Image (cartoon, rainbow, N blue to C red; front, side):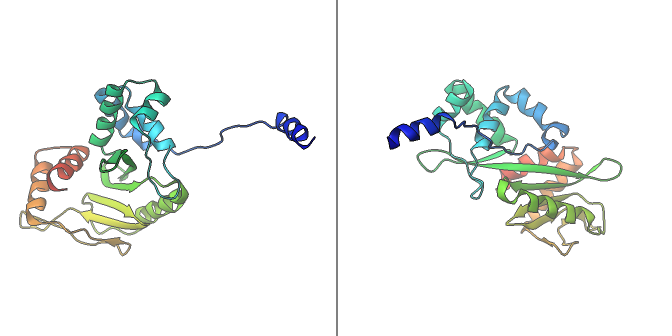
Length: 218
C-alpha cells in the first residue's frame, strides 16, 4: 500500500533542470568570440559544456572527452581541437596530470577609458558562488583613483586584485609599481619587462601580448 501511494505521488511531480551559469558579453564585444570561431567552429559548444560543469565552490570542471563528445555530438578530434583553441586564447587552463583533464575556466574583462581605449585587463577563475564579489572588486578598481594611463594586467585571486602595471620609467625601460591600495604586485624580471616593451613597440595587441607572455615566461 505504501509503495502504491509513493508511486502515485511521484506521478504528480515534475522535474526541470534549473541550473545556470554566466557568460560575460565581453567575450563577444572584445572580438574573442570571432577569434575562437575562426580557430575552431565548435569551440563555443565545448566551452559551454565545460563551463556548465564547473563546481560552484571549487571552480574546476572535469568532464571526460567522451562526456563532451556526448553532450555536443562532436568527434574526439574536434573536441580536442576546440579545447586547444580555448586554451590558446586563455579561456580555459588544463591540468593533464590525472586520469581525466581538470579545467579551470578563465574570465577576461577589459577596462576602457572614456575614449574606449583599453587601459586594463582583468582576469579571474570562474566561480559562480563568488561572482558577485568579483564584480564588486572590479567596480572598486574602476572607481579607485589612478595616477597614470599605463596599461594594467590585473588578476583576481581569492578576491584580492593582483596587478602588474606597465610604466615607462623615463629611461627607456619598464618598471612595475603599485598605484592603488587594493592592488598587490607580481614579480617581474628585467628581461620580461624588456620583452613586453618590445611587443608594445611592435604594435602587438594586448591579447597577443598576454598569450606571448604566458608562452615565453610562464
